[in-house]
Length: 324
Image 1 (cartoon, helix red, strand yellow):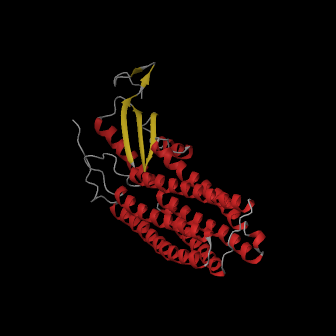
Image 2 (cartoon, rainbow, N blue to C red; image 1 turned 90 degrees about the vertical axis):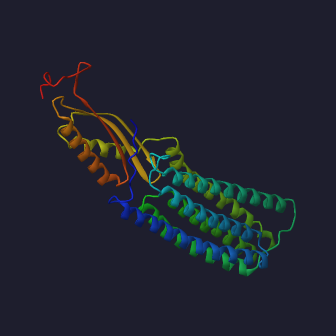
Image 3 (cartoon, one colour; image 1 turned 45 degrees about the vertical axis):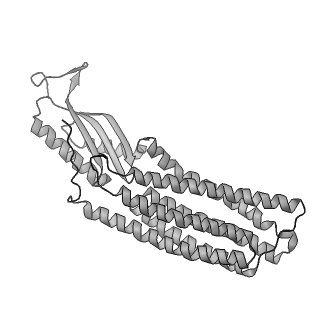
């Protein structure tokens, strides 16, 4: 008979999870405020500074702002405890948020590249590209400093709370900083080197867009691995095996299955124990093992353990024939 055991809210890890959620919200709201400031600054600088590159940069910052909102919404959903419709919790909402952030990065990189190539083609055909004003350069420099700082703060929080979505959002901040580096170089070249070098602006934008596309791939890969039920990395598998090996009553571990569910880990395994071991003892060993795994991989780790007697020549040993 299937039963649900989902009364998570009163368990010891709830305080830890609340801290995790608070850290994610705090750093994402901080990033959102920086993005709001930069979107306004860049659009004004792009319009009054006659810089197409700065307007493209403003669109990039706007997308960054929108991904902040996505992260806030999806992390709130992913932190909800398991319920009757979600036996394994809601961790995959965070994975979905990571994919959305990564794909938006990919689209932005492609759009920036296409716009830059179009401007280069126009320049090569002899069309005059308007040189930008000084205000656009100052806006680009301000963006570099603010967005790199925001990246450093956000990525530190994302790694400390083990959130792919927050790390993905941090890369969005850095891609904005990289985009502004290209914009600054292009604007500076166009202002100081004269009309023949106005093409530096779109050229730099194309180079930067390649970095943005690279960041998008880096963000999407682990999230796609998770959606496709990729096993945990080999070092983590070795750690699980070592933890199981510490219990002398367990003679063999097999059918080990692992995966990620958002910021959580799921581990399922079959264990062999002596046939004369009582149900009480087998359960006690399983519970101690589950406790050790949760101490190592987090309190919300899903652990499923199936216990069976020792086998010899393909047959399970009955208690009276078990030499151990």
